[in-house]
Image (tube, rainbow over all chains, first blue to last red; front, side):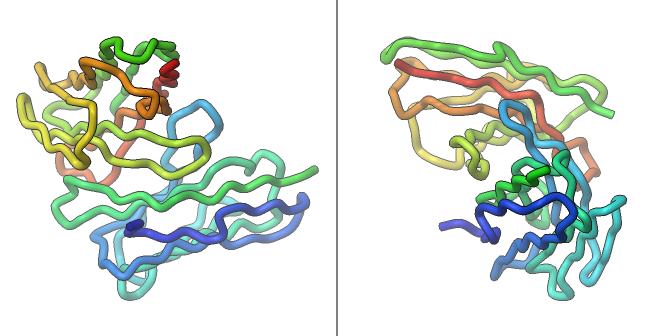
Length: 111
Length: 112
């Protein structure tokens, strides 16, 4: 059973379009991380959200942590081919000893 | 900030052979260390984590084992590999008093 559900699993869009990726759970997390991974490489941390309702912006990427700390979203504005990759969300349990990963969203941005 | 090294980068092994993957960390002390396995294009499955030297927590029963002989060294092993052990193995580190993980470059294991 996947603790964190990500949707959609696959997304193929044209350059310049906007998109949103969702990460949902019935569990409450102390914090939530978003990673981006390219084939054959380790995931790279994009952002950590800690406070319920928190919104963080990283250039064209906007991350939001749900008020109840159970869900999160990643919104990309004007997607570019360089945004192509696998996006993973991960929730940290309160001891920070364990992190639970979503199944990933594979994004392909076509030029 | 911490740097995580993994080797080898790729490995092809026959079924029934032993395995040893190594992960070392620089730039932090007393970190939590993790081994994950990833199927192609999918999420990460936590295999083991360690909060200190000699302390290993296993998340799923399987053909693998882990050891932490030094503070910044984490080893993933198997006595006899199975075909189902093929995958992309990732080592991760969480610095003490921090709430996020950082990943190594990974090892691609193919069992034939």
